[in-house]
Image (cartoon, rainbow, N blue to C red; front, side):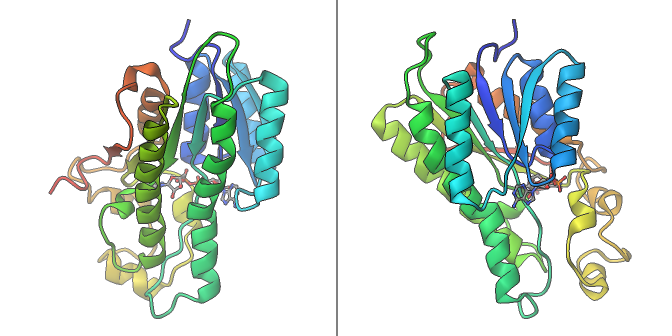
Length: 269
Ligand code: NAD
């Protein structure tokens, strides 16, 4: 028996990187994982990897900025499994650029994908998490993937930092609300440092900005940036998944409104 046997988890952006590692980690502990992403091949590959390891998962396409889809998918989880125990709000994108160059369209898209997504996920998951379960389990665990960029500022990352700072404080406000309602639902944020995932190839930035932010670098190379962490290298998606599995499990039952920083020491100095 795993620490999450019988639990049902919903993981967004689970077709790649940290989200995939979280889905695999939760399934390895016995959770049934509802994998969603706008990237259908990536999401199906995650499910295939979970099933190959003997776990349970299913994929549904989802753009996390669309409220109707959130409502539909949470209802689908309840129809299929009759419960929702864990929500990992992981889907995210990174916009970089000097604040004077960022367009309003880029800013709003950054906020929609990284912040509005968490609001919608929490709004629609909470009623499902508050429904009675056949095994008497009460409560739930909401885990929002923020960033070290939600703890401190970085040149050229104003839109991204603003989005991750918002996720950090939304997490604490939701934690307070659930605690006040005594509903047993916990809400925590995770703050990864530099993690080796495809997000670094997807950042929209200019060469001039990159060389200003990372001297000597002519691209946003995760190995170069990761070498700046006190431990000397970037982290792996599994390093974040380990923290997410802990926050999902009853081992973290007294944690809510917390910030779990997993960053190779990035923010320690
Ligand atoms: P990634 O690009 O590998 O994965 C992100 C996933 O989100 C992708 O599968 C993508 O298709 C999906 N996604 C993007 N927009 C979406 C949308 N509108 N609807 C649904 N899915 C969408 O990146 P990652 O590094 O695994 O990032 C996961 C989370 O971790 C993000 O929130 C990111 O900001 C955060 N994070 C990453 C790092 C890092 O160094 N990699 C550091 C701190 C925080």
